[in-house]
Image (tube, rainbow, N blue to C red; front, side, top):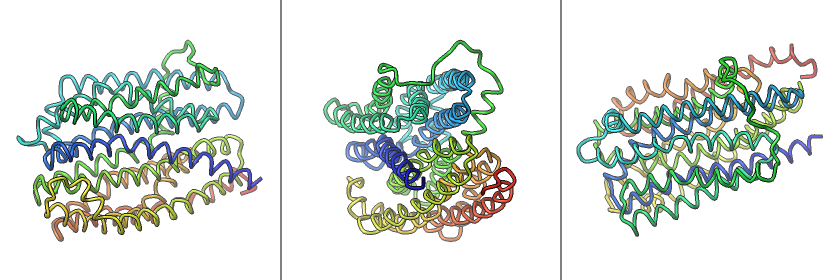
Length: 442
């Protein structure tokens, strides 16, 4: 029984980690080509824009994971009609929020660029990138919705393929649009925005082959369904949005300390950090279908084992990431520092060595948040997520930057994740007593 569970864990987690790695290259590809074509100011403009990408991505994850988790619970209880109503509501909710993002992109992208920190040297590039990705919001959000539902429909392989192919296409299109057609920042944003369309076309195979159990049915958008979706998906949203809040906070503080060069340096670190977060998110998304089914069937043993597997996996991944960053930091910096700016190189190297210590705690926090959300401990999951996202990190960035400048900024991330891991440990230990009341076998 445990061997079978472990095999499923390895299958779902490995597929989703590979898929999320592919998805993370959306922005990483942009970062590389923007650095080569547009230099430090281009990197700074891109870094101002990434927070909005994270916001959109988090919205899609919230609806996708929240809806898919509820769908999976209902399916495990043979409530097929209710499960399909959840998918229908999730689909309609996605379109409504996507429309809101589109309207912001069309009418308010320049004001948003200024709000995020863009100045006279970066405003045009920031505005171009933001306007483009916001207009393509329906494809980003629908892609995240269907990735989650297809994954929960016992087909983790296809979402992995869709994310990887979309990512590879993004890198190829980045090169074509920026270096062959000389489309500048718009080319980078356009390439990134075509990637979810390509991913959606691959996901359509699930429906063409009629492998799907979930279906769109005639049903009104119900407030109760939206509440369930948000409740179960909120932690995923906050986990993703924490990156956006950290980016905005760090950018604004760094601008006052080291200007656009400092923001460019942080842009390199933030983009490499996105890969690390993507890996941990892949682990979390991989365990979600397994946790939701186990919870729906009241299988406490599987819940406990999945939690152990995921925490151990996150620690191993953190060790590998830190060794890789510490060993190859200079090589990584040289790839993105196209102007060979010594100031950027020195800031980034120090940042890598300090900032990535936080990943030893961040991975545990991300998987435990998903665990709590999947067993409907949404308040606890929200507490962990919001602590990571703004409650702790924003004050620490301000306080520590005042004490130690750039080193204080890098330390703020590490200290935040450490404090949150202590909070998460306390919550997990406290919830054991409640789970014992529900499951006699735990």
